[in-house]
Length: 313
Image (cartoon, rainbow, N blue to C red):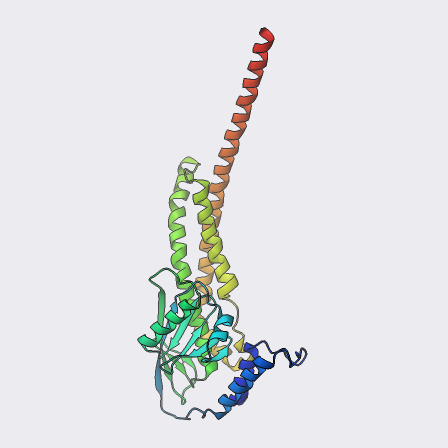
């Protein structure tokens, strides 16, 4: 696929253009199609990147800065976007950043000023910041046209710096940094249930309130929802459907960052936290229901005593 045609395809996706089986009427989308045609013309006029055989180095930084990023709204508020899935944008220093909807941003060779400005821009668009300090992860990338894609101990080697390759790197690195955030949150939840498990083993009861236990359960459920619903850490990126040749690079990155293993460990910890909190909550609720039953028995006895006293008079 030629570069200009790829730009047009990505632009059409971003405005919800239908495929050959679902062609929308041109009139309701006239404004959007005009934007697409303008962007397509600009992409065709843009000179192709030089086919240099010299190796180049990229510094990649992933930051899990937000709870969630509304990429659809972001596409409507900036003209600097380059692709929509995942959302890719060119920054003021001519570098590239990829925004992932679960709150991670991956910068490619961006200056500190450009990073700070873009994070401030995202916050100004209503995206909610995560508690600081934010989880970050760095990756050194060597772009060498004379070599094949490969993951090495100290760097990642790419045969070119095409958007597809950069987006694939961003997808995996973004998942890794998001999982680091979730691992930190889960450690806090595990710290809360550890004394609870010890207390249950020692006395068979829990002194924690139902509210505290429900908060622990809520934390575990929230992390599970983020992993499965937003980050989709075990799902293949959509771009692999268009670029099946990058399957090997994707598998190497997933293995290098240990995404499946970390996800399995997170799932096991979530199950442990959830089961412990639910067990303690069941015991607390049982104790409360037992007290209520004793209150009812007491009231019945009191009523009988009053009735007998009335008869005795």
